[in-house]
Image (tube, helix red, strand yellow):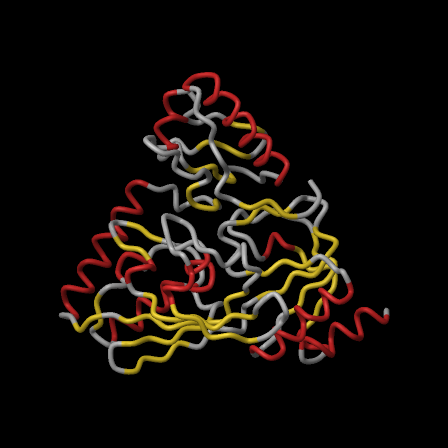
Length: 302
């Protein structure tokens, strides 16, 4: 066992919290990706802080992983440390407030809100991500966004210290916060909702779920909307107008149901997906003059 691994295990809270050669296809919604050299899953904020500090001191590349719903990992894997938030899954309701860990999926928070007859989180029930990821990108859908309900967050800062911040400190905007720029890692946070009628909350959640099933290719692995919305345009419409509906590279395909989604249609590799995205960008630029920017983050060696 290497000295690095021994020290990483100590920082992350024990040998049971660290694995080596972990297949990342098991941790991304694209269901692709090679092995992470090290995969750490600390179980509390202090262990998270110690793990991050250790990686920084060692000069070891590291990546914070939520649900893997906005991530494409290269087929040859990642040579650094993937720090998973999978154990940060607490969710407690106190009055009109919900305290959530960064690793809990949004659907579980929505169910908690429903059980407590709290309204304002229905928009997030079908977003395939975690609370931490939703805070980082100010996730939103169907007229709602995290900015409207977020009160505060607990973060590990660039020095590895634990801080509590008000939502106003995060510069929340359209699919934006200052969290990544400032080197923060979200450990958890608190949202504030409003008392509502449980039947109406449930009906709204079911209505939005039906819309997603109708319009989005939920039957295939994907990372949701693959490209950011360019100002004044819709990415899916630009891709459709470029004649790319159903266009395929290897096992990766532009969804026939919604052109804004790139899907893993049939045993796609990460290289297939990345090349398809490159060709989409090229064709859309030629057709409309618009530069599409990927919303999906790429990690590792392709």
